[in-house]
Image (cartoon, rainbow, N blue to C red; front, top):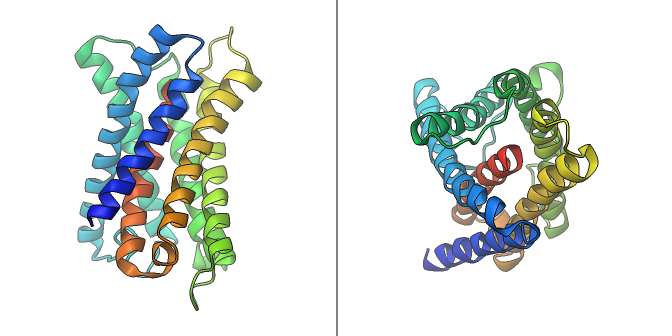
Length: 242
């Protein structure tokens, strides 16, 4: 477990370094905003974990963070999506109201109405909806029978990242974007592609450093799931609100 904690710390440092490099052109304003959003993203991840644990208890599910060998699907995937979107939608404006420091942009609540179904769609695409005969991209890439190969594990993280950031961050940014911002440079590259790259790079590094346990040993799969949730919410928060 000490090794796992060390890996989490190392990859978290990569996230911070990546954004500091990205913000080098505007060091003061963006660094201040980043220093606010990163803790908010971590808080959102903790709230997500708590909401998912409560949801599992209410419905007697035992998915956890993936270490059980079972993945949510169908309506459980939709429920998982709500535990992701609720903290992302509510925590930044709550902080803004308490701290009196602007975090969200105009049209936040309009964008939130689109983020809710789009996040649900992203989860269904990844995890499937068996009642309509769709097994999900995760199982298509890495079927549950047999061990997960390194190539399949890395490919799954890439598809995971592309799906979530394309369906959550980019539509949100299009709705809240100021008229002066560039759709390609600001909303697509800086706020969607860059945080997506940081997320997938961090997860791929973890998989490579702990392979094959990171993909096939329940304890390390559980660690990977917890790390993925932390990284995902942090990067989504930064991409949406930076």
